[in-house]
Length: 74
Image 1 (cartoon, helix red, strand yellow):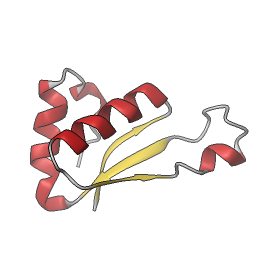
Image 2 (tube, helix red, strand yellow; image 1 turned 135 degrees about the vertical axis):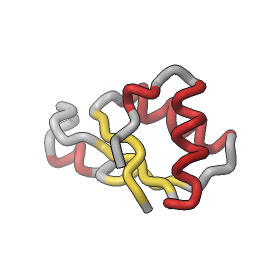
Image 3 (tube, one colour; image 1 turned 90 degrees about the vertical axis):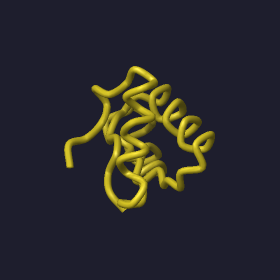
Image 4 (tube, one colour; image 1 turned 30 degrees about the vertical axis):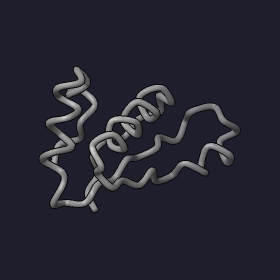
């Protein structure tokens, strides 16, 4: 799996999750439970990971949705 997005923004995380679900792209939200350790202050970013074979399709979806600036460089 490769990192597609890394952010502290819960709205972006939720939006990307929704886009990936709608496109039937398997994903994993890593570090989601780390917010408990930082007291939900948003200090530790969460990462969205996708299968390498679906990464190009996932990037295109985020670009089409207008959030290409959130995409992590490979």
